[in-house]
Length: 471
Image 1: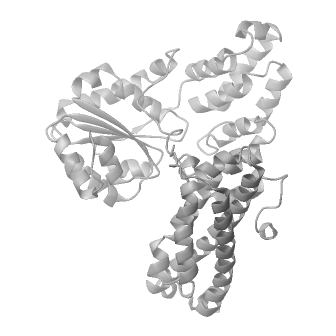
Image 2 (image 1 turned 30 degrees about the vertical axis):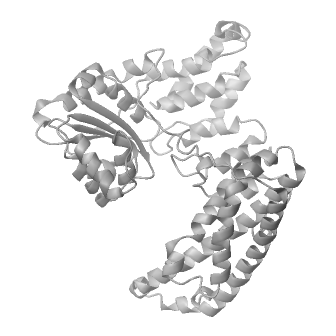
Image 3 (image 1 turned 120 degrees about the vertical axis):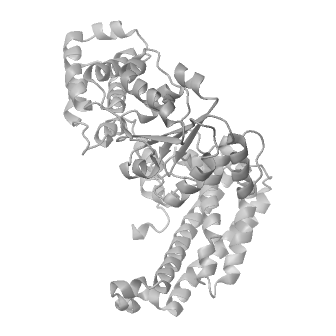
């Protein structure tokens, strides 16, 4: 398992290091002073490694030598990643000093810190970087000997957590449970009184309550489809990139020039009554929102934007009408959600036969206790139901119940979801913890993550991880 994960993530780790090595902060605050030669070598050789890493990863499945080569590359990439983290920290420290933050805080004593001595810092980091470059050069020599071929890397980023407008509701539980809220919001969006200005209506609430699901119901409502000429669904997540959002809205090819992308957005929206859903927004920067909103104002009369977010401050920043606080789900719908997952997921035998194998009445009596634990959260109901769908004894259900706590605003959903984590097969917990390091909304295959965190969790029984003495 460890070898498989290594071969999957090494290219992404090298890509992260390459990006950090190219950070403008390193040049701006001259933290690479005295290390320019090593810096240039890395900026040349890391892209060269990435050119053939896909072929190397494929060959590692059947060539032990290549597998060992990837392990060595992973080790030095981790070390380089830590070095560039230190360099970036030093750049930020110098930036803070330049901007007078130390004086404001009365922290002139920072001169006593080792990092304040630039000569000492340059000596220490130069030695580290020199060792890394020397190892990288050996790795590149071996890489050429293996004869890897260039293969374009396949990026599958932002796929597994990307939301869309398609709603899956075979039992009509979702449609029934959110009907009144959906009708209320649809009425606001279609209200002629809001036709003079762009309507921005946020749906706000804690994670797991179903904000995205409610937005999907509204997006697919027949009245909404008739009222709006065009509709878009954009999953925003952590990265509120105004230009990327503009490109996603525009039809056809869009030039890389950011200003031209915004101009095309304005042209496409001009005179059209549209509905735009911005799902899972985390942006608190008013400048970014103002820039995007200025372009979205070009739409026709009656245009509207539906936003989902967990943060009330973001809802206040973006809203033009009162935000909708999503309600906790009624118990009867929580119960339906739970039973659908606990008893209706595919088994080797039908659900009723499984219940006949145990004391069915006892398990059904316990359903109410699990519903109480969910405290109105549909995600909690699905998570608990999924954990229990393979458990067919009263003892197993009781064990899960005893481990669970009520999912409240204070405890959030994490305590419930941890039951799913605890139910993972042996050995998978480390992989899960590793993937938790991925930035929200991103797939690790994109390389935009924090791979230095994996060493203790992902390889607890294999060779010692790099710099393990410091852990």
